[in-house]
Length: 504
Image (tube, rainbow, N blue to C red; front, side, top):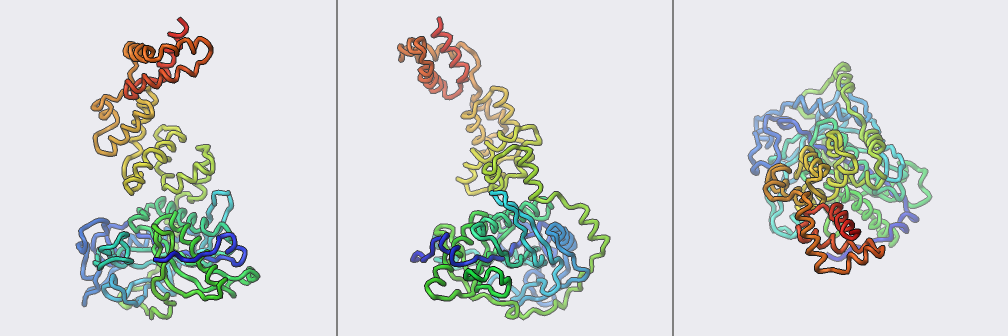
């Protein structure tokens, strides 16, 4: 595929104002699906979590999942939305291979939540209020598994298989209003907003929010308008594209930036933007055309005849409001101050989705910087190699045990990294791995002195250099001793012994 011609980002901002709108789909972690008793479980064998309702078979009638309604209202309240006293479901009609019944039960003109706002904070400290138009309930579609090709995506695939396990999983779709004024920060605003939504639904306990599993997905709408129309509001908006199902925070930021650059180049060359969906390619950092984007009228919405309207009472809504957790932006601000992290350190934690994990580790007694060092360092490195979240590899309690061994002098950092690998590989607890592998630091001076004598025999001039004031010469002996003892010597104690020998 030929590389797309794009404009320099700074030049694009000189010519055009970027306007974005974000649609975030949140899968709810209810026990069963939105309208049926089928299990809502990730990772089952294809086409096993199904009932006739999931497939829209004749005579199968949907029943609303009460827990999904409760979760949806809680999310709406956390987004600062009004909760509708009466809302209903509609049929959204379109044909797609993963829609078994050729329509999706959703909400159209009467969503459960509307008119909200979410505060986000950028790495620079800039505060942005993202306007929420609506948050509505719907059912998820199935999933296409593309076979063949290098990326597992539809491009280059030989054929596709349909798995309907996801069909009917409860979703809340959060739709923003157009976001103006982002300017150069626009890509970061998009990623930070999605990150805040992720933290919010995790704090509410309503979703696993695993982007790599599709629990949380973002469709990013991007349009440009020529400079000089900044004060025109909705009156002058460019044609938008919608990059579908972007599944990582980094990809959200990159996709928005790319679309700004791509559209700017087309417009500067005298072309026009096609209103369409687009696919994001992580490997090339580009988007490619999907299908022409339909407007709402094209879906032929009509009221779902098999479901009664929802009428939550004010008492019920207030009960859910009282149970809301701390807002993610406020929580991040508080934790960063408590932990004394720099902006960059804390942003690394946020991007890795490790705020809650480090919070739990610190609560168990580990210093914040120590927790950050291990979670965003060695554990994250292994997680990246295996393309899994760091939290899939270790639990906070396991790291707490490891840090206790380091603090006690049983392990140094080099040995601790070996223990982490053992924990991740399922060899047991930190103490069990240390015992089985014989990894404990040698604290007995006897073996250390023997290793020092052997090293000095190889480098007899070191002691004389130290006596002449060149204390750094001890480093050569320390390195030799550490190598001889496979990293299990206490380097500080070795240094003390070498300096003692030089003083004799």
